[in-house]
Picture (cartoon, rainbow, N blue to C red):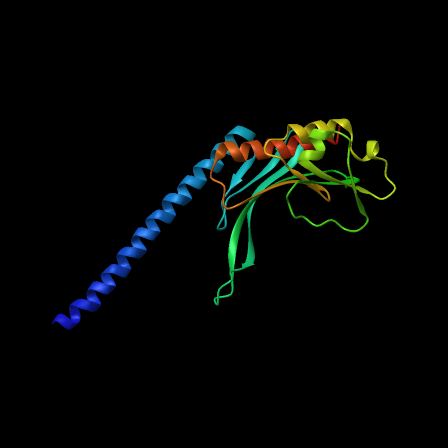
Length: 195
């Protein structure tokens, strides 16, 4: 009889563990949903949750803006191979591909060889961002004053890569204030190109 109690106890432990983990996952999912719904109310972007992760999309400040979660395979450093990491991504689409690439300092986005690193002469801007200009393009044409001001005002800071104004964060962001600020920052910088 005692031989049966040990497997039953182990089974009970496993079932209880899965129930608790399921409860925690549902609670976390509900928190994420509430956060993203709050961003929908504040920005007017459309919320949908059809897959594993939520999404927001629509027009903000006259610019196509989207928020989603992407996963990236990264090496784990262990014998078990790679693992998947979630990133929250906010994107504002530019109408035309700009003549610049801008990245926040200390970020490791690669730029192609035909982009030349340039200093603007503005200490605040040069301290915060790395600017790359297409070959044979004057700085004044590539970086209009309205875009420069929008980049400096962006909180959190954003990048300009190809034809997208971009903000990313490692993990699924559940902070509605941070997500709203990221949406506003991306859309404001993208809208500045149209001025």
